[in-house]
View 1: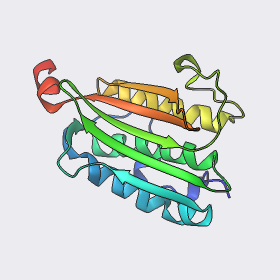
View 2: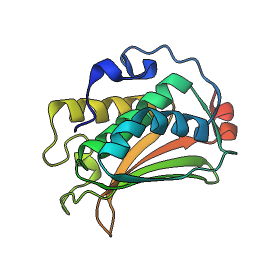
View 3: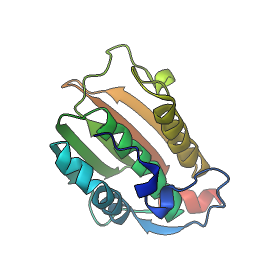
View 4: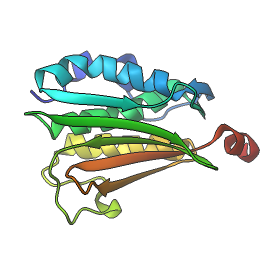
Length: 172
């Protein structure tokens, strides 16, 4: 079962184009928990083992709906590439100037994938490419960066890099 049905998407995924961002302090774990809860049926039916390692104390300056849409796009991408099981690992860390949220899956991607190919993973459909493009745009709209890398143990990790609240406030 592929996680692509538009009729069951949460409100925050309805349309990520032309967003008027309403930024506020947002708890990153709350966003991740909401996205994973929405995907729970697909996670269970596809025999995927989720691991969430995002401390509750990580806050970002973001539009909560837009950030949730970006995370949702990355989670749905991972689920689409693991139709018969695997691991979904979501990790959050705070650095000196950035907060990183990594969404990693255990699907075997091409060893030749690079950041330049973030919008066109092997075997991806136009819908997948559009989702990843939208996620990247949302992250950019928040002053961040979306990167990707192949995991040594298999799979791929997409990482959202956002400025810490202190850096975001100083840039405003």
